[in-house]
Amino acid sequence: MLLYNLGSLSISQIDDAAAQFGVSREARWEVQNFDNFADALLNATRSKFIKQLDEGNFLQLQRHYLSLDENLKVAFEADFVDKLGTFGHFFELDPVRRVDSWETLIAHPLIRKDVATLTSASKILDNSGIANIISKTDLQTTVQKLAEKGVRCRTCTSGNPAYRYMDEILDDLEHGASKFGNEYTSVITGFKQGGNFTEGAMFVADAVRRYGDDFPPGTLFEFTEVTAGGVRRVDVRVGNTFYEFKSVASVPPSGFADQFVKDLNLGEVTQLDQLKWWFDGNKVSSLPKQQFLDALDNASVPQNIVDNLTAKFGGNSWDDIVDLIDNSFDDIFHVK
Image (cartoon, rainbow, N blue to C red; front, side, top):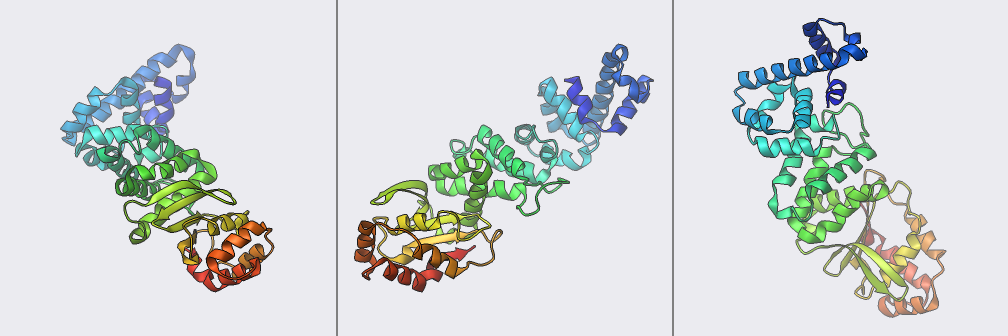
């Protein structure tokens, strides 16, 4: 515990405690002095923190702080001993829930001190209606996977600026879980899987919130449909409209033709405008139509599938189907 406290404090805080104890900062590494030094450091930090609680009149926060186990007390002091004026009012409003959101983010020393992220995490944890959709453990895993992708908090000094802020993404999750209920569970699962799954889930969560009128309650997320050409996993279904979300930098994406043929062959699809392929506008600014059509031209489509598609959409051959897709391209493919 004390080792954790030492690692969490700044050099100036260690120097202050060292001065109180009357030893040099370097002496903390001496075995014969370490235990006493660490105790002095802990006591100095705690005394300063409790004084700030008193001076700020943070009575609710002080009561809850004193109820924490020792490890959490040490971490909380280390985070806020020099910042209580900024953070005290945030925690004082609802210390139990807001300290709980801080504890949820305990594995991330920078993120857990960001008020915007703490606020968004609190909204998720406080929303009892979505507790069975995104639990505290789910939230911790999601934040971990987002941090691994380089998602930043607003006060973080590093991260990938191509991504939106952590609090914005968490707000998407709270919105989606509240609006869509259990159907949204697969989106949460995508976040927790990491890597490209997290990337795709970020795009889905953002898009269905930004274009909320297109995705009413009752929208279905990530389910499978069996077609004559095999099983097709569909990202989102609204009525008889089927959405595919792609967060990729290279278009057309790998496997595009095979995947799109399966979409065409879905039993409920009788018109091309029932298919919507949305591409992440943070990754691509336009879609090279001819390259998409070339990929379809070069696809090897079994004759029984071609017969099924011409019966649905018209024409006599696969070339005729590609011509129809050419005419409907802008109704199907979009950058969002």
